Amino acid sequence: MMADRKPGVPAPPTDTTVHSADWDSKDLSGEQHRRVAFVDVDLTEAVSRGAEFYECTFRNCRFNASTHEESGFINCAFTRTSFFEATFTRCKFVGSMFDGSTYDLMKVSGGDWSFVGLPGADLRNATFADVRMREADLTGARFAGAKLKGVDLSGAWLSKADFTRCDLRGSDLTSLDPVTCEIAGAIIDPVQAITIAANLGLTVRE
Image 1: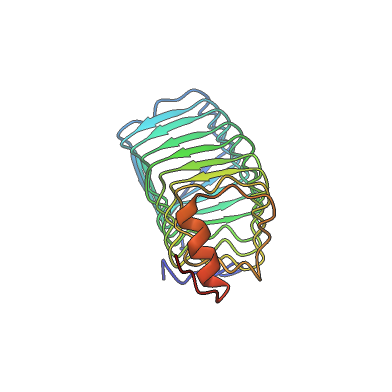
Image 2: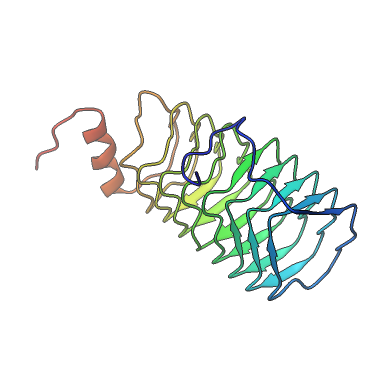
């Protein structure tokens, strides 16, 4: 049910639990975790390269100032988790769900975040660049003043999302309905302007 999991639907069941662990500055490179529940785990300044977390649950965890490269968080669930100044480079979050988490100064570069669930997420201070977010649930997400450059948003759910003053240049906006989204002051390129005009039902001619 990776692509269909909705808010309020239970996360995948887990087999083991890591509780109240201090993983501050821990190197997680190459580690593999499947169906593990991480509860109150401190991952501040942790680093990972090539790590894999599959169908794991993170509750009340801290990823603050952590750095992750080419790691996977596949079909995971994040509840009340902090991502302050966390950096994710070419990572995969396919099918993962987020609820009640914070993302101040989080930076995402490259990677695949398709089918993620971030409804209502406050991403005003986050940066996404060259990320695949196909069919992501961004309903009601707040991107005011954020940067989403070169992001593939094809098929994404964008109803009631706030993109005011957001830098959207180079992103796929074919799913953006200007009638149901806030886009005042957003920064777009000429190609995107044509896309938005077409989404409004206008005919663009030279």
